Amino acid sequence: MATVEIDEQTGEVDVVDYVGVDDVGTIGNEMIVEGQMQGSIAFGFGPALQEQVIYGEDGTLQTRNLTNYPVTRASAMPDFRLDHTVTPTPVNPMGAKGAGDVCQPAVAPAIVNAIVDALSDLGVKHMDIPVTPEKIWRALSATAQV
Image (cartoon, rainbow, N blue to C red; front, side, top):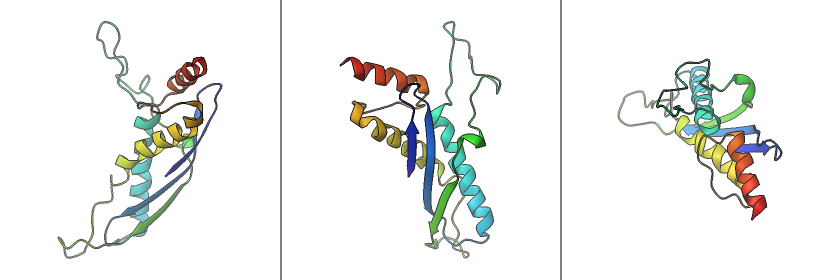
C-alpha cells in the first residue's frame, strides 16, 4: 500500500508511506529477508515514477546510460513499513520461499493506484507508467479544460 502527496502546480509526487506484507515461507535470517524486501520495493519505484526507455526521432536510444536514464535515489523513498506472514512451502525441507524480488511486482501498481486515487476528485481516472510530473501536470491541465 502506498500513500502519496502530489503538488498540483508541478505534478511532483512524494511517496510518503509504503507498507508491504509478504509471505516468504520459513524465514532463516529475518534481517537478510527484510533487506531483500526493501531492495525489491526500492526497485519498483523506478518504473512507477520515472524509468523509461526513450528514443529520439531518428530511432537512437536516448537513455542508454546512467547519465540520462533516471534512477530512483534512496532520498526519494519513504521508510518502508514491512511485515510478513509465514506459510512454509512443502516443496523443500526448510519451508522457505524466495524473498529477493517478491515485493517488486506490486510496487508500481500500488504507487500508480495511489496517484490516481489522489487525483480522482479532479477527474483523473488512469495514468500510464512511469507517472512523471509532466504526465500529471498534463492530465490536470486537460481535466481543468473540461
